Image (cartoon, rainbow, N blue to C red; front, side, top):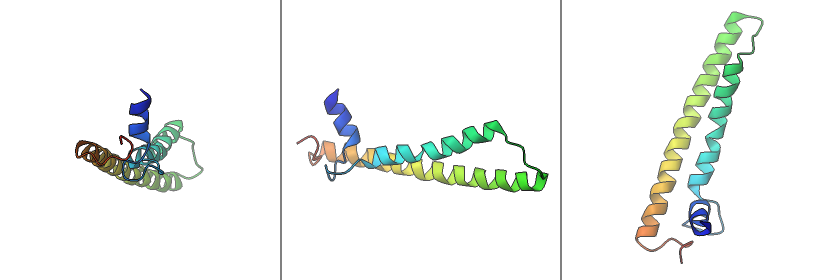
Length: 92
Protein backbone atom coordinates (compact mmCIF):
# COMPACT_ATOMS: atom_id res chain seq x y z
CA UNK A 1 0.00 0.00 0.00
CA UNK A 2 2.82 2.37 0.88
CA UNK A 3 4.51 1.63 -2.45
CA UNK A 4 1.32 2.45 -4.36
CA UNK A 5 0.92 5.69 -2.40
CA UNK A 6 4.50 6.70 -3.19
CA UNK A 7 3.99 5.76 -6.85
CA UNK A 8 0.96 8.07 -7.06
CA UNK A 9 2.21 11.01 -4.99
CA UNK A 10 5.91 11.29 -5.85
CA UNK A 11 6.92 12.56 -9.28
CA UNK A 12 8.26 9.81 -11.49
CA UNK A 13 10.50 12.30 -13.31
CA UNK A 14 11.95 13.95 -10.17
CA UNK A 15 11.40 12.16 -6.84
CA UNK A 16 11.93 15.42 -4.94
CA UNK A 17 8.68 16.83 -6.35
CA UNK A 18 4.99 16.03 -6.09
CA UNK A 19 3.52 14.26 -9.11
CA UNK A 20 1.66 16.14 -11.83
CA UNK A 21 -1.29 13.82 -11.31
CA UNK A 22 -1.69 14.91 -7.69
CA UNK A 23 -1.16 18.61 -8.48
CA UNK A 24 -3.78 18.55 -11.22
CA UNK A 25 -6.23 16.62 -9.06
CA UNK A 26 -5.85 19.19 -6.29
CA UNK A 27 -6.36 21.94 -8.84
CA UNK A 28 -9.65 20.25 -9.71
CA UNK A 29 -10.92 21.13 -6.25
CA UNK A 30 -11.30 24.77 -7.33
CA UNK A 31 -14.04 24.07 -9.93
CA UNK A 32 -15.74 21.79 -7.43
CA UNK A 33 -15.78 24.60 -4.87
CA UNK A 34 -17.21 26.97 -7.48
CA UNK A 35 -19.92 24.47 -8.36
CA UNK A 36 -20.82 23.91 -4.71
CA UNK A 37 -20.94 27.65 -4.03
CA UNK A 38 -23.28 27.98 -7.00
CA UNK A 39 -25.63 25.53 -5.33
CA UNK A 40 -25.90 27.92 -2.39
CA UNK A 41 -27.28 30.50 -4.87
CA UNK A 42 -26.49 33.60 -2.88
CA UNK A 43 -28.89 36.26 -4.20
CA UNK A 44 -27.48 39.58 -5.41
CA UNK A 45 -29.31 42.90 -5.58
CA UNK A 46 -29.58 43.16 -9.35
CA UNK A 47 -30.46 40.37 -11.77
CA UNK A 48 -27.96 41.55 -14.40
CA UNK A 49 -25.16 41.51 -11.85
CA UNK A 50 -26.09 37.99 -10.86
CA UNK A 51 -26.15 36.87 -14.50
CA UNK A 52 -22.65 38.27 -15.10
CA UNK A 53 -21.30 36.67 -11.93
CA UNK A 54 -22.86 33.34 -12.88
CA UNK A 55 -21.41 33.49 -16.40
CA UNK A 56 -17.92 34.29 -15.14
CA UNK A 57 -18.11 31.54 -12.53
CA UNK A 58 -19.23 29.00 -15.13
CA UNK A 59 -16.43 30.02 -17.50
CA UNK A 60 -13.78 29.74 -14.78
CA UNK A 61 -15.21 26.42 -13.63
CA UNK A 62 -15.17 24.97 -17.15
CA UNK A 63 -11.68 26.25 -17.94
CA UNK A 64 -10.17 24.93 -14.70
CA UNK A 65 -11.94 21.60 -15.10
CA UNK A 66 -10.52 21.16 -18.61
CA UNK A 67 -7.01 22.08 -17.46
CA UNK A 68 -7.25 19.80 -14.45
CA UNK A 69 -8.48 16.82 -16.47
CA UNK A 70 -5.81 17.36 -19.14
CA UNK A 71 -2.97 17.62 -16.61
CA UNK A 72 -4.22 14.68 -14.57
CA UNK A 73 -4.40 12.52 -17.68
CA UNK A 74 -0.97 13.65 -18.91
CA UNK A 75 0.58 13.01 -15.51
CA UNK A 76 -0.95 9.55 -15.25
CA UNK A 77 0.13 8.62 -18.78
CA UNK A 78 3.68 9.83 -18.05
CA UNK A 79 3.77 7.92 -14.77
CA UNK A 80 2.61 4.67 -16.38
CA UNK A 81 4.97 5.13 -19.35
CA UNK A 82 8.00 5.75 -17.13
CA UNK A 83 7.04 2.77 -14.99
CA UNK A 84 6.75 0.48 -18.01
CA UNK A 85 10.10 1.47 -19.52
CA UNK A 86 11.76 1.25 -16.11
CA UNK A 87 12.73 4.90 -15.68
CA UNK A 88 10.35 5.73 -12.84
CA UNK A 89 12.66 7.08 -10.14
CA UNK A 90 10.24 6.11 -7.38
CA UNK A 91 10.29 2.42 -8.26
CA UNK A 92 14.06 2.14 -8.38
